[in-house]
Amino acid sequence: MRIRTIAAVCAARFAGFACRKMGRQGVTWAGKIALKISPHILEELSGQVREKIFVVCGTNGKTTTNNMLCAALEAEGKKVVCNHTGSNMLNGVVAAFVLASGLNGKLDADYACIEVDEASTRHVFPEIKPDYMVMTNLFRDQLDRYGEIDITMNILEEMIRKVPKMKVIVNGDDALSAYLAMDSGNPYVTYGISRPVMKNETNEIREGRFCKRCGEKLSYSFYHYSQLGDYKCPKCGFARPDLDYDATDVKVDDQISFCIEGKHIVANYKGFYNVYNILAAYAGVRTAGFSGEHFGDMLKKFNPENGRMEQFRIKGTGVTLNLAKNPAGFNQNISAVMQDKNPKDIIIAINDNAQDGTDISWLWDVDFDRLKDESIKSITVSGIRCQDMRLRMKYVDIPSFLEADVEKAIRNRVGDGVGNLYVLVNYTALFSTRNILKKLEGEKE
Image 1 (spheres, helix red, strand yellow):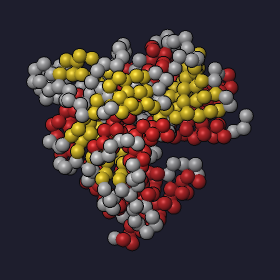
Image 2 (cartoon, helix red, strand yellow):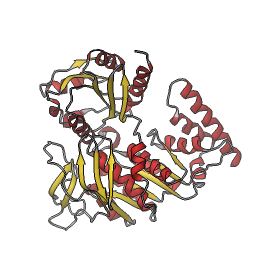
Image 3 (cartoon, rainbow, N blue to C red):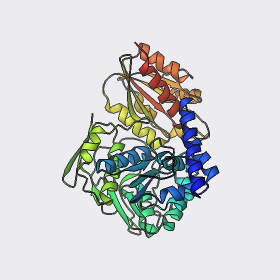
Image 4 (cartoon, helix red, strand yellow):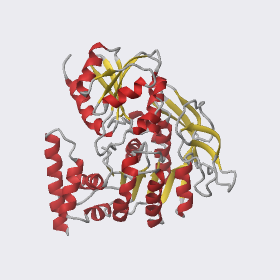
């Protein structure tokens, strides 16, 4: 077994190196090759983690939360293995462990922070047996890949029950996630925002409107966004649980700030959804037994990267890249863009490759009419399904430019735009667009 492990690690590391030389990410290939050579390599390497293993699941916010939790543990002086790139299916998870190992097949890590695709938990959990699971939220996502939310919930419930000692760190403001944690029988802790922060005026599709325990329609005293808020079932009494980590005095403007456990947390990010990402990471590091005294300092240095509100500077234009792959996520992206009152241009790139889901009907559940604002000077639609996106904009009476080639679209707006550009992309457009932006950033003016 040791010889096979060493061979798998060496082959995977070579594959990753070769892919990067060719300008490709190469992570999933590294994992795939390692599994071919040593089918149980994930179990063997994860077993070498000296202390605890975290997994992060949920529809939106996994990558940011997972990377932030990793950074928080590193700020406590711990060595952490993490799938930073967001490759969260079995091959990507295997690659995270393999690429962090030495050529001798040894892993030097105190903790692991592993983002896992919900459907992939069936393949990952039996191999790594996590100590903690962070649940961010459950929204409708890529119907042709995942089906309705009930299917995802059934998978997660099955896998949570198979690791009965695993502690679930759950977003208590999400009735779906909270029900899973409370019904599983596993120990759990909760995080959330117990008081309303801002008036929710969107026409969002709200999932989980009915009680998962008895089927009655839930009563909400307020929503934060989508179905996140303060809920109660008038029939069976199911309600938002008491919050172990409750953010108070939340402010969302040019930066995010809130108080928790007597600490004042400040982060230079936009988007209300990032309050939840930060809360999830904080609850994770506290649940692991750390005081969180270094958490604020970590946030000052933390760069989300990987296309999560990632910043670029190209020929005098500030460019913000962000992933938007489902209605709830896109609506929060729009909210983050609208927080910026300065003149701005927007590029929206939509693909329909297998990883995106070929059904793009979800675009009609996004509140694009909110982009009808005088601060938005232009909207360009791009990507494989740019025509569909242009039609969607037409139905809310917003004119748009069409440029299927993402690089041309970016060059055009850098050349004649207002110097403030937001690029919103769905999943398979993310890596290639990020490469384009990094290339353009490196070009001489």
